[in-house]
Length: 112
Image (cartoon, rainbow, N blue to C red; front, side, top):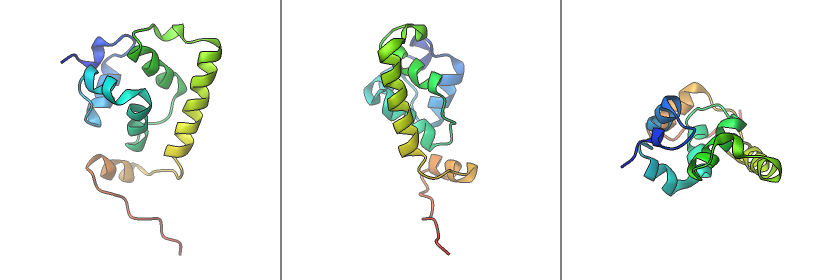
């Protein structure tokens, strides 16, 4: 099994972020794909950052991060915006993110 750092563009910070959500190998990351992995990061409290999103896509394709340009970058931006919107339908608190990390489902938002 290969480490997350074995992928181009991904270093210790990425490896630590993925480890916090249970993704510890490059193979596991590749198997679930960039969108699902990034979705899980967001669901567990990571702040959205477009560059991190497209760097992840490039890494899983074995390409340098700065290879993403033009129409491809525009398409990834569209995908990023949609993913962030869908994932963050409501702002999560740090406590909710921590509870989610441990598998506790947050209580439904009260309407009183």
